[in-house]
Length: 334
Image (cartoon, rainbow, N blue to C red; front, side, top):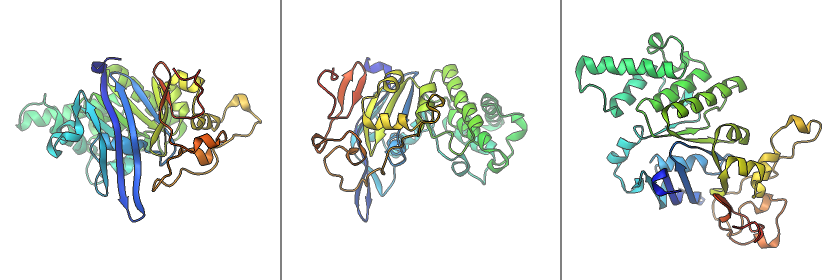
């Protein structure tokens, strides 16, 4: 894969939070690549570092959090070296992010139309410079975006507030606001949180459809490997602030190389296994303060051995496949 086919490249990202108990290494040496036009699924339990990784990409980490080291290159430009003003010009226009809970992410004091207008006014360079023509263009574009995400009667609903919409409609409005300036990369952080299964399917199909129509890249952050299997080209599995496995979705799901990935897959209910108990992963994600150098999945891993009590690096296990497990045999390692 040539570098010009990579839209986003994250190398050795470390994001930490200073707390009274010590330094929390929420993201510890993460490498990410997002290619042009692809959908990357990012999977892991709560506390694995998924959202913090991409909040770092967006420049949204604030004190007591900080990016300790690493590079974040978007179209070859290192975002960590930009000023606040320069980053603000990229955030929203070139990279957009939808947050987990639309009701808390949307401003309850502003109408949907005002929130769409704010994004367009800040980032759409194709609008008329000023005056009534600019206001009309912003309104027309706002109606177009609501129509794009399937909001009925979009013209009349611009004046409504977020609480006047259902959960699924609010999620669509969040997507419309994120897409309004025509970003090259959409980061969707748990876009189906708190939605029923029917609405979940509609929101995910909407993201896939818009991605295909606009040719943009998508990062889909989720707990659900079933969602990844249906919508993503590649998958990155995170645990305790590190990437533990990555590769094409087909390869990772059909032949998982890390015990944590196997555990996530084993936790999914399946009709073909009716009558057999689901085997969840035992234990909890470890405290990220003062972690020992051993494999971070050690305490929960059913396959652990004494060899796992050492630091484990990502290893290539085939074309475009990597995993972080000491148990990989030399035959498996490419």
